[in-house]
Image (cartoon, rainbow, N blue to C red; front, top):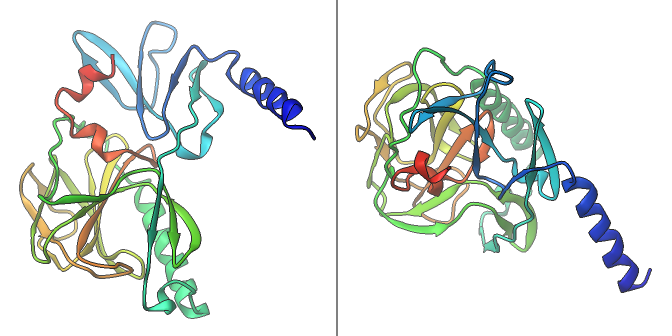
Length: 261
């Protein structure tokens, strides 16, 4: 196939996927859709922004170049190049897993998956999030990831490098719903902030909370470490909305909700 015809097919594919989409955004973003009488009955997180009620929709990373349909609203997920991240891990057993380690990692992934389904609807997040640790951002959301030159899943979190033992705080109030010591994540915590918004914290050297504990914004939950599969001490911070991993840097910006309008 010539390059000319390939570009035509690519353009037509874009038009087909995006024909009915009146709203678009980048993968990892949150889209706010104003509710009216036709779509006010929703199970998704809703917020009040300047007197109007909006439904918050996370845009999946794996739907780039496609439209998603939410409550009869078509939303197009843009293609975006986030760059790449290449790391070297000397312990190759952490890269090419044994059968035993592979089974362990799978079981732990199922524990995390089930936990993400167990959020509360008793309280709602206030979206005044703060950064959970002071440090240097070492890897941003969305980067294509290579470990020992082997392609791996994209990096759908925020890595913040800091000295081992640095204090990690809750970025917003919530409930501790999972604590574990996992193959990939090391010492690990999940906080439920309500209505499908959850945050997780990986590679901790110390955990300072217990399961089912309620924490306030700024309260210490643990310390930075290098447990699990890492190249050095840092916090791997993941933010989920409706089980979709979104870009953590978005929710810590000032006046986040107003920025959605």
